[in-house]
Image (tube, rainbow, N blue to C red; front, top):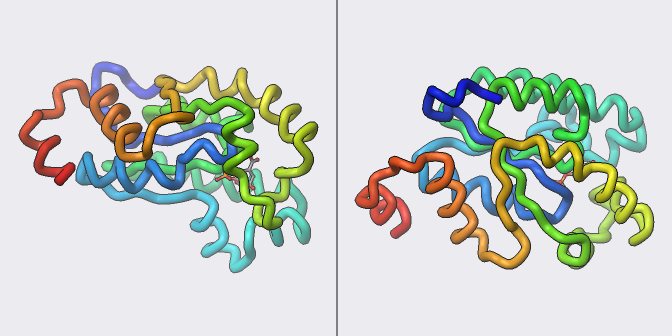
Length: 183
Ligand code: S3P
């Protein structure tokens, strides 16, 4: 993990598709007065391809390479909240990079919740049948468990979840600042 004696310089949200990483990241960043970045759209911007196109045209390993290269860049940036793609933290090298250089928060969700939230519009190449998603969900869990923090992301509105993460990761965050930034 990042040096626990130092205040966090960047926070990375990990978790399965549908956990709410993309929704929570900007809210958490607003509370902290930091920037935020979503890895998937950033990869799409850089490659000029959608995630689905990268998978289709270049294969999943190429997408994982893009993810790892972007993670390596992002851990050089300060005051940044990152919404990682659902598979990033399950890739050993990307996981090691993030664990060593960032505070990692797992947005934990049960299978039924993610099933209800994952859009079936072809944008997520790994969102197949309930059976294949369930298998991926189970296979990923041991990776996500290696995050520094775990938050229940299933039944809380994104604002409350962001506040909970901010309070946990920055326990000394002044109440005055909290009120101001949450208005
Ligand atoms: C993936 C999750 C997606 C995206 C890609 C692969 C995964 O991100 O990176 O489709 O392997 O779980 P979200 O978690 O933002 O949906």
